[in-house]
Amino acid sequence: MEANFWHQKWAKGEIGFHEGEVNQLLEKHFNVLNLQPSQTVFVPLCGKTRDIAWFLKKQQNVVGVELNEEAVRQLFDELGETPEVTAVGELIRFSAPHVVVYVGGFLQVDPRTRGTH
View 1 (tube, rainbow, N blue to C red):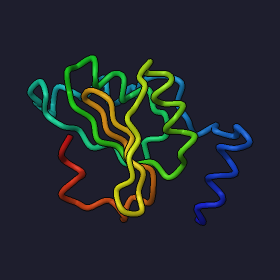
View 2 (tube, rainbow, N blue to C red):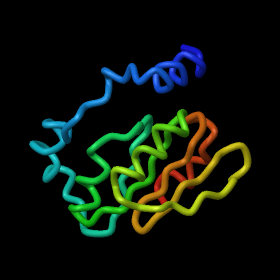
View 3 (cartoon, rainbow, N blue to C red):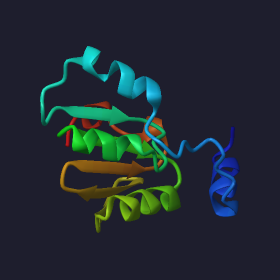
């Protein structure tokens, strides 16, 4: 699908794909990951998922990628965080304590960056 398709969905508020709660399978199977506090979790195509706040409560660091900037702004608003916003090549990096989200295409993010906070 074209990026413009997703931008239009966000602009119109047609985000039926957005789960209003933490993913139930994540909650059920999280312990299987055996993550230690402060390890980094990568969340591609994150939108404004509630999973990120949930990971933060579990003391995980989060790196996400989202195509739509408005979705990322809404995410940080819902987290109650004012992000630092910087350009990283073609991407825009939103960061706050323990969470970084890159705005842009998933494949534009350097693989070395995906696992680092």
